[in-house]
Amino acid sequence: MSITSRTHRLMNTLRNGALLPSGDGGAAQSLAARPMPRSPVLPAPAADLGLTAVALLLAVVNSYQNPRMGPAAPWANLLFAAVSALPLLARRRAPELVLAVGLLAKVLQVSPFVAPLAFYAQGAYRGPHSRRIVWASAGIGLVVLAPWDAAAWSSPRTVALWFAVNFVFSCLVPLLLGLYVGQRRAVVAGLVERAERAEREQRLVAEAAREEERRRIAGEMHDVVSHQVSLIVVHANVLSAVAHDPEVTGETAEIIQTAGRRALTELREMLGLLRNGPGSDAESDAAKGGAGDAAADPAVPAERRPAPGAAVDRISELADGSRTAGLPVTVSVEGAPQPLAEPVERAAHRVVQEALTNVHKHAPGATTRIHLAFDPRTVRLRVVNGPPERLAEPTADGEPLLPSGGHGLIGLTERVRLAGGTIESGPTGDGGFRIDAALPTGGRPAA
Image (cartoon, rainbow, N blue to C red; front, side, top):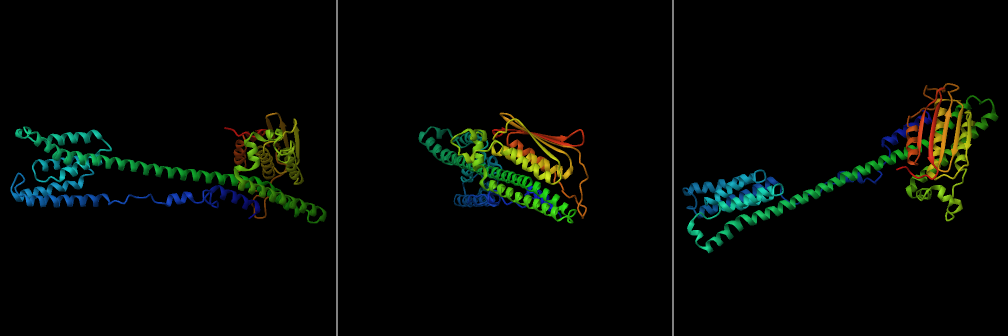
């Protein structure tokens, strides 16, 4: 497998995220693996079963000690007392049914223990959803539990005692306690849901950051490696044809060495950029108004001010490298060269670099023209190549000499847009191809 084929496979692997570790140090995996803390309470079925057993035991003991309390014979009263506690098993799903049974057992004097538990269940499980039903049940309890004996109403003490015992302690207090517990449970559930939603959003943000970093590294590696390695492959392919001429062979080997050194230099620059991140000096200058402002600001040291013709020199070097590889390239400049912001200069360099690489791949030997036009606010780049002069040579195993991954123009478009510019590309009428880019000299990012 050729070097360029391995390079393109590496680019695709980076884009797919198979080799890149988590950008947040594994935070997303830890968030996904960390379980939410649970409240140290019994499960709902066990709590309902235990509460029902306690209420049943108290009702049976109370009926056994007072066999005449109830509408029937002692054994029937004992049975009614035991049965009245069983609906507590459904207190979460049907609190109204449990309340009806509890009020009936209270009125019939079968069991006084079910009604308070039923009012609590009404407030705890129905209260967070419908307060009207809860207070309506309190009103019903006030009416049902009221003394129906006219003589009882003649004594204020009897009425006050009934209100304190039968309504306040049996109905109102359990109901308010249930409302509090139900509301607290709803608040806790809302907080848990909010925390889970925040964790999901954090996972999405971390995943988006990793994806963006993968795309950034893949784009940088494609831009840096593809062009220089393509030149190395082209010159190495020429070596087999000029092996009989030691002088030409030495010149070609020297060109290959130069291209390799440039590739290593650009790789070091890329790695430094990735390590420094958005806080580097060049990007700080761009954030403060671009290289144009940095060049005009006397407070900026002279060694940090970009040279007006730096972009043109770098593009000329690219043209020279392609020209030595047998590609007829011409460079023309319109207007006075201006200092460019570091992201803009890098984007302009990558535009020409990618265009020349594509010419080597798809149109070997085609006449190529690079045109730069400077004005006070923008720099325009136009790279146009004619139809290929010869067919691309395959390797010994039948693969293309310079295979294409299909991601160059896509990454180039993203880079130009991040620098605040626009780019267009497409075929020309004579069978060639063109790339037109416009970049702001100040390097202010587009919104």
